[in-house]
Amino acid sequence: MVVADLELHWLELTAAQIRLEEVKRGPDTGPAASLQEVRELRALLEALDITPTAFGLVRFAGDKESNRKLFSRAQSLSIRNFTCIPELSALDDLESLADEFRIRLAIHNNATGAPFDKIADVLSAVEGRGPNVGACLDIGNALRGSEDPAEAVRRLGSRLIGIHLKDVSARDPDSEVIVLGKGFLDVPAFFAAVQEVEFPDDGALSLEYLEKPDDPLPGIREGLQIAADAMNG
Image 1 (cartoon, helix red, strand yellow):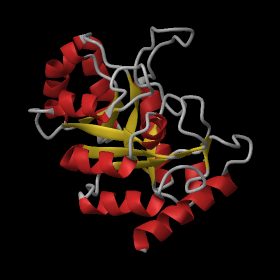
Image 2 (cartoon, helix red, strand yellow; image 1 turned 90 degrees about the vertical axis):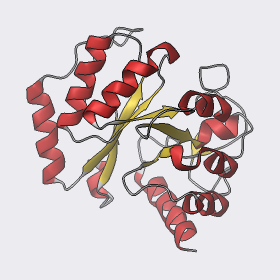
Image 3 (cartoon, helix red, strand yellow; image 1 turned 60 degrees about the vertical axis):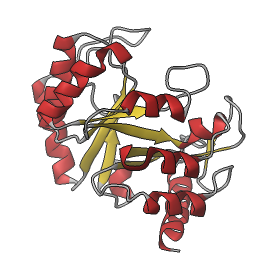
Image 4 (cartoon, helix red, strand yellow; image 1 turned 30 degrees about the vertical axis):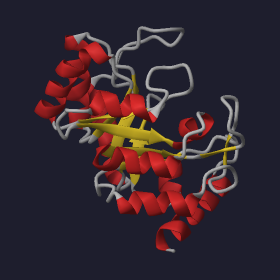
């Protein structure tokens, strides 16, 4: 496991590691993981001293039964955040589940033309909600939409409970995800804003790197060092 190779101890899970929900959209269909598969993954993570911080990306609709099952499976893995794109009409019920299971909803800003493609859309969705409804800032999508990630952090403030930390090669929808600090993100300014808003200790800060999928470790290590230098500088 790459996370263990990097001597990291936190991981945002995706469907690539475990399918927690039944997928019924598009070409990727199939049942959710069995309880045995969930137990096996938990045992593996515990053996590697890895704590799952979040699971996503989840596109929540209004199916109350399916949503409850998903929250229950996530609770068995001690997941703290769902990185999600919820239907606005389902948010009341989803917030009730978040309160019941003590799993937060981190609404994810998206690419231009998709739901929540602006930070203002995320802020509007979380306004007036309780502490278990917050935001996951995708830096790549902010940059692609010509929004300043540091300013987005300040606008989200205490609602910021998740970050998809990445850099991009250009400020357009087709830009590539490259080594952190090698693109358009002002890394020191970004982390200064993160420290300013007191990002929570149990928040999900997830580094993304897609440039060299066959040999990702050098680029990930470089990005981690750049992030560490910025946080400690």
